Length: 475
Image (tube, rainbow, N blue to C red; front, side, top):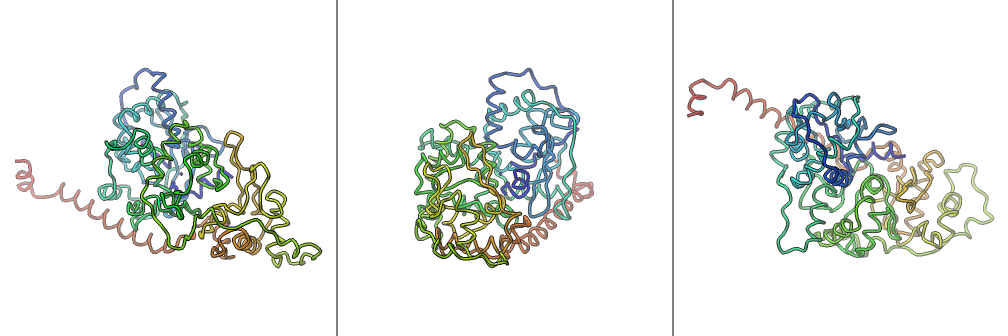
């Protein structure tokens, strides 16, 4: 399950941190002696940055890389970021480490892809980067093996083009506290914009795959999943959540209103649940002040739809059709859902198994996450307080899942939300249903070619321009 959702998380990229493709052959000074307190601080910060999730393959050694992360332009393979001197980052100086984390440039001068969220990590302070460096150099076991290299199609394989992309979109200045804001708010802003990199998944992207700052945290596709609006809007976002509910969700992946799944489940499991209550409260405090982005179709909070009900009269005493694709929504619910979620979808009495009404899973018009949860279930340890749900990928057909999904939306959620058989088939394959993805990628490819071409021309001009002109430049 975790391997599947990791590979689907796209730009977590997202689409959840990705491919820290640091070079391996740079010459550097030997790291200084370890400082235990600094290493412990660095471990906490690396956990906040969710480095483990993307740099550890399924059943692989910690931080040894090798995880294939699916993106719209092809798989990006995470690399070894252990202190191995032959396969990892053991030769990196602090300056080289800082440049990779903040500017997306490896020690060998090659550019990283922004699937590694250096655009967010750029906000990290010098002191925190130094602590992370101490942890990776002295607190992580070296692994002397390398996995396959990232191989993207032309023109996306031209890493030099990222220099132009960074010129347009990278702000590599560390976070500056806002003077008239409280310490807790500033801490939350620092984490949300920086190591927690919330915008990587929850902010839509423009044609060149950069975050659209005008839609900050307004909701976006992350591969097949949809990272919802988490602005302060009371209907479309989380403005109606209490701070305590946000903290509970971030620390356990579960509240009465919502349950984490997909990439968010991994973010909770690998990262957020390990943060201090103070830092989680800081994140909640800041999120509640993010400018509201409202979708006019959201006429009430997305967790406020539906009510307890059942259609048992249409099920009891009625024979199932021989062709199970002809089963009704109530029949499918009775067969696959009622045992755990109860006859009227009210969930278990103690709240361990959630109700399906007054739940964001059925309250959003975007139904991808509902379909994917039915397909693959939820397995979230979360310190023993998480939700465990089986997947029905091998049990139910696309038609059955569409029928069940539409029944859940109509009976217990927002009846305007729809599930189609075609949608289920696409999501089952791991592809995205994001509209206009193909056209956007074509535009991005063309833009990438233009940027790469301009860079090449500038390099050629610098090398071959007339000697007299070069002389004047140096005068």
